[in-house]
Length: 122
Image (tube, rainbow, N blue to C red):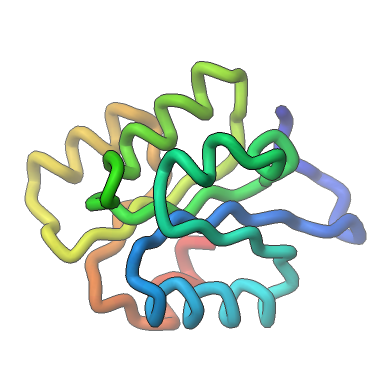
């Protein structure tokens, strides 16, 4: 799927984060920035939803109960998805950063997230 270039069209975000408080905060922030957000607590529920192909943006936590954010992006890329992707992690290391970049993540952000940091990555 190509990234939507039409500014007047609805932008869609796929948010995969197991912490309910973080997920809700990010969902509200993305909605405020004009995104239609579909959020999930795990990789499997996100990947089996019908929302994947229509997403322009993926924000995924590194550590999920049923995999990693790297697994989510890998699966999406294998399906031909080409949207922008942001990995968030509370365990930021150079190795995670390198793996995320190698998988194709555009940005890797460390928790706790600062609103301005996420907005700059969008």
